Image (tube, rainbow, N blue to C red; front, side):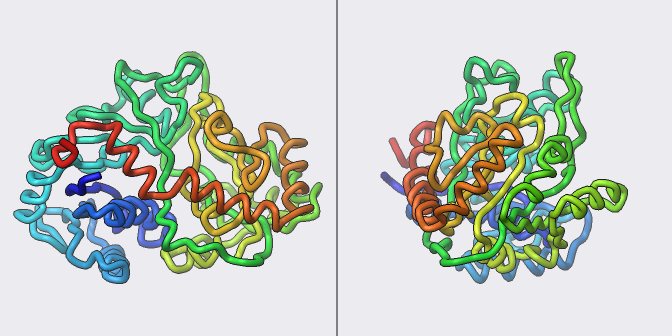
Length: 375
C-alpha cells in the first residue's frame, strides 16, 4: 500500500483531564504513521486553556509528533503550526478524517480533496439531522461510523440518505503490550456525557446512566471487585449513593486516568473490564464498540461488555464476552474469573486480529477510496 498524507481533526486540548480522549486521537495518528503516512492533528479551543495546550504539546512530543499538530485558537490565531501551514497541509493532504465534524471552519474544510466524517457516537448526529437540530455531515464526501451496523437493515440509527462505511476503532498495538496480573473489574466512563437523551420516532433514546442502573446488582452477586473511574455530576448524588451501596468503588477519573500515562496504567493494572453502553447504542442495535475496550483487549485484559450488536462482527466467549441482561452479566464475570489465563490470552488475540491500527486503517482507506496515493 502506498503511503499518503492525512489530517485528523479531533479534540485533545479541550479535554486535558481525560486521558482516554487523548488516546482516541493518538491511535489514529500512530496507526497512520505506522503505515508510513504523514500525519497532522488539527484541534481547536473555543476558550483559552493553557493546561490543555501544555498537555497536548507534551503528549505530541512524547510520541514523536512535536511538529505535527495545530490548535485553532479563539480570535483566529493558532498554537503549534501556523494557520498558513495548516492550510498547506490540508490542501496537499490525501484525506481529512474529521471526528464528529470537529473541524467546522468552512474555509479550512474546503481545502482537502477528500473529507471523511468519522462518527464515533452513532445515533446522535443522525437523529439530530433528521429532527432538524444540527447537520454535522454537511461538507463531507464519505461517511464512516464505528457503529458496525449503521446503514444495515434492522439498525435503528437513521442513515440520513447517506452511504455508511463501518470500521472498528484502531489500537496502535506497539504501544499497548500485554500486562500480567491486575486487580478488579474496571472501566473509565461518564455517567451522562455531553449529550441529552433524544426523543425520536416516538421513543426516548437514553444514556449510560439509564442502562447502568439495570446492572447495579452485578457487584454484589459476583466474586469480583469493581472499580469505576466515573465522571459523574454532584447533582447525581443519589446515583453515587446507590452505586456505592451496591458494592461499586468509585474513583475520580481525573486522578485515576486523567492523562495518557494514567489512563494506560489504570487499564494495565486491571483484571478485566466491565462496561455498560449508552442506551442509544443498545436500543438502536448500532454495533458500537468502545475504543477504550479495544485498549483493554490489547493489554491482555478480558472485556465484559453490554451487547450493542457488535457480537455479529467479533468473536465472543473467550477474551470478549457480551451480555444483555443481568444474569448474563453475572455469568460472564464469573466465567472470566474461573479461567483468567485463558481469557487474557484470547483478549490479546482478538486485539491483534481485529483492532491492529495498521490493519484497520489500511482497510478503511481502501474502502473509502479516492485517495490519490492509492491510484
